[in-house]
Length: 261
Image 1: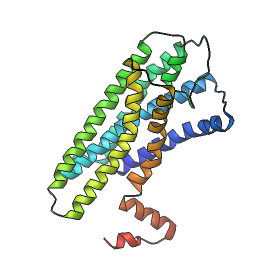
Image 2 (image 1 turned 180 degrees about the vertical axis):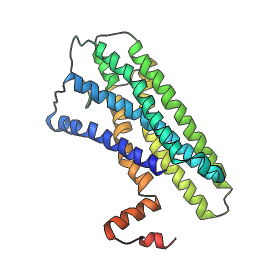
Image 3 (image 1 turned 90 degrees about the horizontal axis):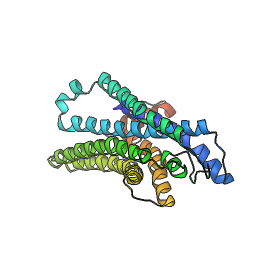
């Protein structure tokens, strides 16, 4: 689990570093010029990390499912080697799936304007501003979003659904509370990532027009809010990580909260 949390932290850090400085520049100056190749790089990083994070969150949900539903088999099924393989495969899938979008973006021609009504380089916004009217540009991203967003989301919902069923059979009220609290907070992050991104990417390819304000808000929420909440949900609520932070700053082996348990 710690490998997954560490990987998620790296994704959040790169996402924030990739987006926030340019967003702040635009908000403060109301204008920002970006070289086209840099724009393509930013777009690629955004899409790649979105795919990577959706796959990683589904893996973390399955990890919790096995730990709760099949605890005796957990050590044999979920080893560090297995987790590293899944993490690397998820990253490789993101690279392979997103590369065609860069190729498509290079084909775009901007006849009327090359100004994006957005705070960072976004693929769908670039397609809308461009003169190219081939539906393949939006159909591709809608298809990828439906598969690499929809399937992991269903897997997450199934995993937490089974965890909830097991929690209902726990006799301890405190045990039930801890399980449901963990599930609900994890699902909150999942909703803030999946729902805005799935909606904003699937609808355009399906012919559903979203206003610029609605689209921009959903993509920003899906990319900015989860990195802010993930440390609170996955790290600071974890006893071992809290104890490690306490030991780092105080030199003591355990925090007072840990000593109570």
